[in-house]
Image (tube, rainbow, N blue to C red):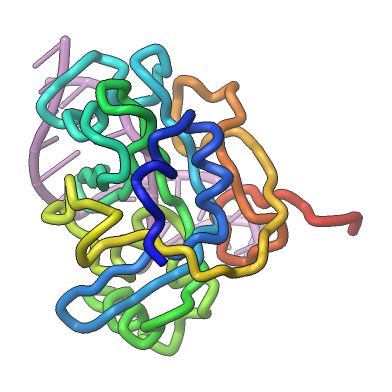
Length: 205
DNA sequence: CGTTCGATGCACT
DNA sequence: GTGCATCGAACGT
């Protein structure tokens, strides 16, 4: 079933961990691809210096102020599309950045998309690395700027609940930013080999 | 393994 | 003109 809008219309720090274990699906040219969300980060309000809403409303960050349950997709470093799920009641700018997935459908399509334009062969990718990292997962799913403002509750780009088992989650600092580094607003599924960056250890060595 | 460095586009000041 | 919510290729160890 599709995750309903009410799910997103909540405090972002409640939405973020609840997204772990849900499934991001994209029907696109080339076919459908989907992955289990295993790593996210919360960006919350104009007072969060790392949130794109920090400068106040602008043309780019307008989706953050829009209704919950829509996608905020933007271009980062001139080459990577990053996808967020907009949260909180409309008018309060916040979102959850999706940082990593475990491929669950359309893995062959993901391989084709990931290998395109690189020197690596399709079969040189491990399954775990196909959607590891926010730029990599949008590439694997074929998510582009045209998906900005798409409704995640209805349409080709969706988040679904497949009734998968609950995952243990761990909170840690957000990655790849220079401000707002103290808050532990990154959530990852413990033990997942698809999680990017510093991984949280599941047990003792 | 590790680290460095270039690519690349655009919103924002 | 500056600075990114990044990635992978190249090179050093």
